[in-house]
Structures are given as C-alpha cells and as structure tokens.
Picture 1 (tube, rainbow, N blue to C red):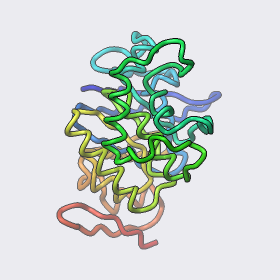
Picture 2: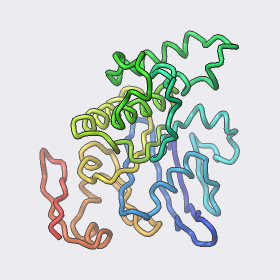
Picture 3: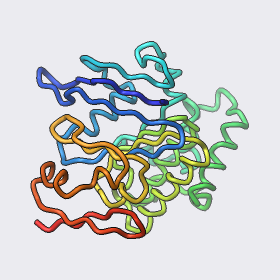
Length: 256
C-alpha cells in the first residue's frame, strides 16, 4: 500500500478528533472520504500530509513510517491542497504561480531548470489551462483560481495527491471536468489520490473506494455500492435516503 493508516488517534486540545482511524490506498486508486461536517475528514488528510502529528497510531507512506521521512522528501512524494488556500500574490501570472509548486522562489538568482518549466507546461495543457498562462492571478474568478491551485499541486508530479474539497467554488461543468481528469490521471500516472468530498454522488461515480466517517471514526469502507446503503447513511446523516442505480453506479437521493 502506498498509504497505510493504522489506529490513528489525534485531536486538538485534550479532545480526540480522530478515534482509531484506519485507511489504505494504493497506486492507481482514487479514494474518497465522505461524511458530515466535523467528522474528522480534513484532520485525517492533514495527518497523512504530515502537518499534524498523531497522538497514537501509525502512518506509512510507501512502506515507511511517516515520522522517519524528512519534510523535504515527504513534500516530493505527497502534494496536499487544503480546503482554504492562502490567496496568491496578485502580481504573479498563472504560469509563475504553478511554477512555484516546483521551485522555492522566483527571485531570479538561480535559473529554473528546464524540467520544471516543462512540468508546468504539461500540467497546464492537461487541465486545458494553457490560455491562462500569462493572465495574472488577481484577474481570475474564484472557480478559475481553484483550477490553478489544482494545477500547482499536480505540477509537482507527486506520487500521492491529497485534496480537501477540491471542487469548491467550481460550477457544475468544471466540477465534472476536474473529477474526471483526476480519475484519468490516477490511472494514467499511477497516482494515489485521496479526496475529501461532500458530494456523495460524485464520490460514488468516480471513486474506487469510499471511506464514510462520523464522529472521528470510519463507519463504512469499500466500493461505492457496498458503502452507500440507506441504513448506513441514515445512521450517519440522520435522514432517510433512497439509492438508485445509473449504469451500475449507486446514486443517493435524500428523502428527509
């Protein structure tokens, strides 16, 4: 397994937010974490990214204990896009901002390797963003900026991509564009992609595996058709659901 989480416990202050969480994901897998607000989804992603140090339990990245991997090496393996992103400097172009995902600064003191420029161009092309390259970040809408944030995360060419609500601020067309592309890249590049999502139906359509969280615990895991059961969802969300199938993909309809 490229990512393996075992009996993870972590919290803020004295109260645990994660209570014995276990999760695994491999190359070529797109894994979604779903659940109500406050269930620990984002905190779990931060632990895997190495931002939060677990109280108990273990996280392995490519078979190695995360505590034994240097921050620099971990940043080469894992690319993390948080839910809230620091606004980028307004005078940067899209090209420069994506390039910052691969270099420490654009001070001009050190020439940027050609391989970094090539990675940026390839990423912009993959996301159909080449026409944005010379535009300034302060000229973009919230949805356009979200696409550029994803581009920066991908430009690093990580083995593991962690995305916290990456479809926020995107219209329906771009939501499907991004999630489809992530699914394609997962297969094409043998990426391990772990996404925190609120849209259960998109998770069902594009994920290989879903982890359903509630109150800091994993309450169900597996392929979408095994996790998305009305009884399970009702216990977690407190409302009733109906499940319908579209081309063998379970789709959730809340009925109150």
